[in-house]
Length: 134
Image (cartoon, rainbow, N blue to C red):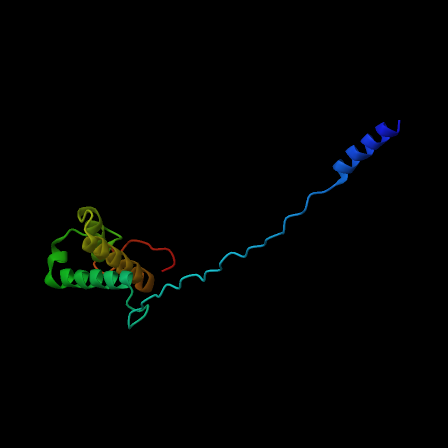
């Protein structure tokens, strides 16, 4: 029996023996700073941004249309007046033209300003129309 006990001890000793552990290696990843994108600003900053200049150009073109008398020959739509009619015509007849869209935006803005400040739009043929609040 002694030989069987020795065999059992040998089997247990082989199970109990642990392997040599590997060294733990901790690697730190390389930290890269985010690239800074430089933004170039114009000299005037936000005063003359792209959209404002376009609308100013449309308002200038609207003024030229009114000054030259072309706008006087157009029929005027009641409640829209002269500037609103020009804006509507520029919107529908201009198609995909950027200048026509800018003229329409400027004309609608001027018509809304006139309606808000005076209660009537310049060139409005009907003075009987009621605008709430005026």
